[in-house]
Length: 452
Image (cartoon, rainbow, N blue to C red; front, side, top):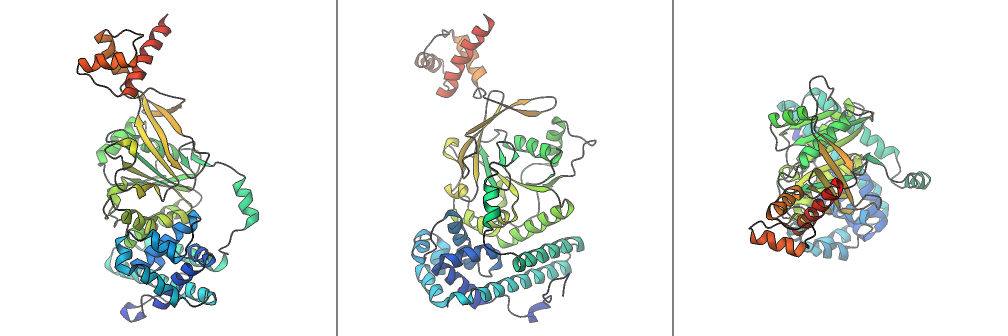
């Protein structure tokens, strides 16, 4: 037995089957037949506890439906998955029907849960043994993973899957809880996207560094799939951070060698990494940043299957851990229409922010939020020496000052209408967006009024 786990470590291929087919099929069938069973299953097991990818994806869909308050009836589930390629390959609605006929009765549920969990633990232990033997895992990493496994077993055996209503209502009464005020909600998932070179990584790195060096106990895990070491050094120096500043709580992984996070292997490696950071900072709240999200995946960016796979393997586990996470992404061709790729990118997070440049900083505009207390807009001005962001009530759209200078050069009257100013710009070959043009007209008038 290993490190207090009441389970024998498997010894190669002779250690028994990798999964229990009856238990996996039976659990999914019960979840499709009984809403109370679906709620219990998703509270006790994660998608990666199942062996077959189609079982993992179906459990992730049940978890999504439970979280959204939607029914788990096989007809509803089948209709919702009818356009998914993996669902058709699994057998479609006929496959769901077969699962329900195999399920048995609710009395089998606890036995099924135990069997699925024990086989999942055996697979993880077997994988750890193989990685240790191959030199892909250190003894410290193995110990951290074993600690995580042991804690998970203890939680599964000792905690009720049901809500404790006395603590439930007291937590609800606390109201908004921020990790970074008005931007990052504590314990929630966030997506932040912007057009190319709008400054999303710069703003978020400043935010992460502030949290990692602040008085509140926060440990940041930043997975950077884009920048070079020189880029990171230059930005941190501009922000006033150097060798004399303790950045130990900013755990920065530059171009990390991780499997894609829309796969079971990627999710497992990420959880191991988070376990190591939390073992190092046990009393700190973890913040995970994925920069840039699309580079952490292997599936097609335009496919909803890719996002569902990420949620099945990684997103759900992040929610279960209760950490705060933020993924950075690119905007589509029309940045006001959302993130690049599938519209499903907003389905598995709690808050989606659109970042845009302003004349002196950045503005975050809320695309969606599950919580009513998230503000519609948050604006920051950017200062230099050191580079920093300061919260303000409002700022001018990017290009306002330059457009105002063009209007002055063309001799457009101060009191000109937007239509007249737009015509003057058009004739001079200096077209501008209407939002920027209107702001420039107001900028000129306020500048003159301020001088008088």
